[in-house]
Image 1 (cartoon, rainbow, N blue to C red):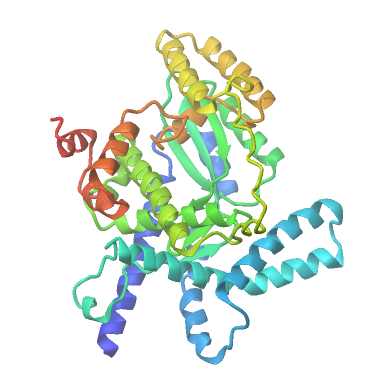
Image 2 (image 1 turned 135 degrees about the vertical axis):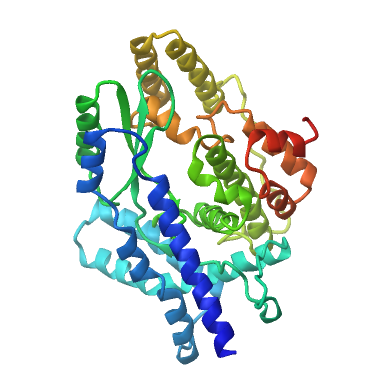
Length: 408
């Protein structure tokens, strides 16, 4: 048994190394840009330090559970944790630096490890039901899930994305420290673009990164947090299959990988909430009373469709860039950014780097890639998120996807 556990621990270490090396390779220079590289070096996210700090924490918490007597229900702990998040946001605006804010932050910090453990257990249960547990030889008899679901609620790194101005293409990207101010982000972007007038730069806030354990941004709602946990776990899972191993090639392979994780993560999160419910169920109506239905919204009242608008903009920008009308494309993006903000959709900077970074997610409004609809068709045909992931895990190109769908 001791040898088996040691081997399993070695596999976990190997997984962490894969995540570490993979992130370092993906978020590293792939072309010359002295200002981008210099800015990244000055503000870099230290992956090694983060891994060494957080990798042992899950197991230390579980070992300590033998000596703990947790108070209250799991649902109660989850509810209180996210309730405290709302309270902290309110106090940060109304009473920054107050004792009440400090007490709320301390209480939430005391709940964090338990909340992570609860969600990890529930996510694991959903993955088991979808037959997505990767159980390596030697460990199948032990019923151990591999990779084990493990995440840390922590500020994730930001990303510096760089694209040529003449086309939309993620030439290079770097992981940056989480705590960058808006002023610093703007200075980095301006410095990169001043050093090389032919590139477009953007500092992006991420929701999570598939290190091992995954880092998930604090302050997310319960629903968004669970969705992100599934998304990042899928990246770790796919490392052991062709789709995950080709991620570092970028381009089409990365679009496939990110889109599969997005689509399957959302579907798995849906199953999670079907099984465990939201934090607070709506109270049943009082007997004898029937709730008054709200009037259905009139689509003519607000015809703004953000997804359709973004896709149309992407097509227009691509057409202008292909014709060499770079300044017109940039002026159009800036004008549309202002229009979106007037409609309640704030985007800090909308440029070629924005579309290059978010375009890898083929199921999002920033993408016009046909991979998104094709993966949606595969999901429908597969019949379940688990089967969708199993089928998609073997592909490495859009041609593979077409063959899987019977189109080539």
